[in-house]
Amino acid sequence: MKLIVGLGNPGRKYEDTRHNAGFWLVERFAARTGTVLRKDAKFQALVGRHEPTGTWLLLPQGYMNASGRPVQMLAGFFKITPSDILVAHDELDFAPGVARIKQGGGIAGHNGLKDISARLGSHDYWRLRIGIGHPGARDLVTHYLLSSKPGAEERAAIDAAIDRALEVLPLVLAGDVPGAMLKLHTQEKVETATADQKPDRPDQPAKDARPDAVEGTEKVEKTEKSRKEGALSGFLKKFLPETDPTRKK
Image (cartoon, rainbow, N blue to C red; front, side):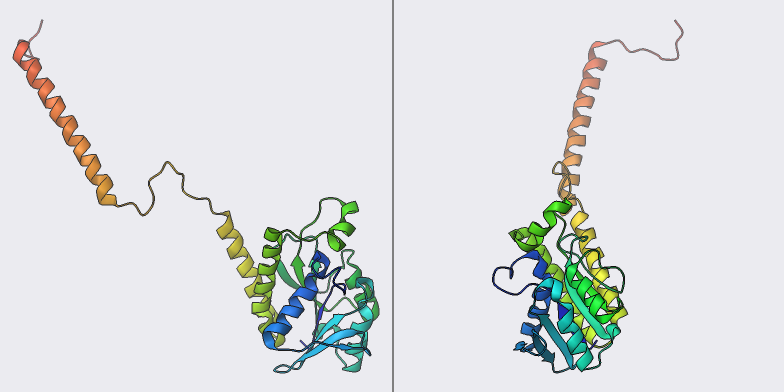
């Protein structure tokens, strides 16, 4: 992979809004790897180079619907094909906590992807989709993306998905995208299965309770029951005449 693009809107007004999830991922990767992002007037973006791999990092500094021009300019300048580009972006169709990688496909109404596809003349770039959830109604989407900020629990889930994506990014940079996809998507399934497990019923003994203690209690109860039954039998034999069960009436 020769170019990683993070999508978002510049400025403090938008930095914590859901539409900036792509920015969050690339900014975090740059911070972890010591990659400096500098404003480049020629490309109208924040640009940095991951030195170990030579991969370029790009954060367009126009608004979302103008994201394609910086991608087109940098890709054209360094002769980078769409199949060597990864675009990190927010995904309404995925719940917070989900992150997935795919190549090509539709743009699902995402203005940043729409402009990139138009500028590159191709849909064949890779996408790293970061789930942010959906507000539930189409007319609420704009406010949900650009004005409201995710709550603490929701943001934690998004951050966790970004962390998992960052764990597999070295595989992407090394050219092993299938390996990165397998690891990322498998991690998500494991975490989902773990979250869906139900706790033990409170009226059941704990799994780590001492079995000898339970067994000992049962033995005491059985002994006491036998003692009482024996005493009752002796009392009846003492006061009632013996009968011969084989004798006919």
